[in-house]
Length: 92
Image (cartoon, rainbow, N blue to C red; front, top):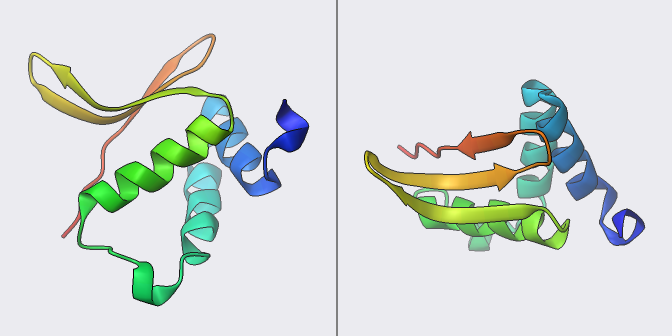
C-alpha cells in the first residue's frame, strides 16, 4: 500500500521510476541526513547497500542487492514494471 510508505521513501521511488535522477539523489540525501552522525558509516559501501535496500523493500519495490553477473557484482538492482535501474555505489 502506497499510503503506508513514508512520503520521503515514496518520493525516492517515484523519482527513480520516472527517471528524475537529480530529484532522486536529493531525496536520498534527505533520507541519509536523518541518520545520526555517530551511526553514519560513510566509508563502508555496505552501509549504503543496507539503507537503499531497506528503503525500496519497505516501499514494496522489487529490489536486489549484490547481484552477481558475468562482469562482477551489481550493488543494487531495482525492478519496476517497465524498466530496471542499476545503482552502483562508489565510496572514497
